[in-house]
Length: 156
Image 1: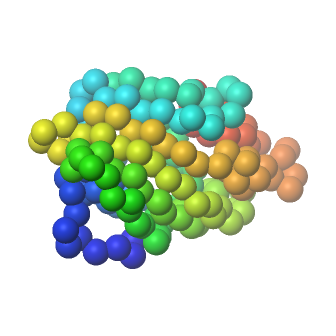
Image 2: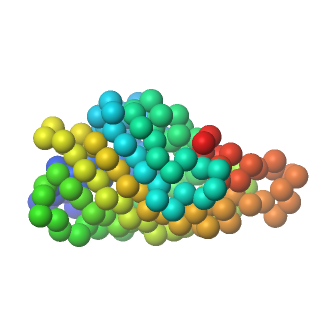
């Protein structure tokens, strides 16, 4: 990531840690960033994919598939200031490869994150472009790789 840690709010720290741990595949540590009853939403989810997940267990199951499907880094992380240190609005770029196809995966994302008084994530609204994922997961020869598309890759 390309941002600094100086003067970050608790919610901004949570976003940075979320991206760092997720892209490193450290899902056990990543799960600890969330409250047990956290909500994670995907407002632009394509048909067949979950648009909302509830609870740490559901989040972990969903993200295991992400880590297995995409080898990415989060770069150019930046924030929009909010009135509350427990709310963060962040923008970043995911850059890497779709593992099943070997195709490049690059897209700009943004998220709105809410944390509790301890800095744990209670709600994460994840805005990403499903078309970029669909393109990266669509093999030039679908029978050669057997990819199941976005919904299959995320175990919805």
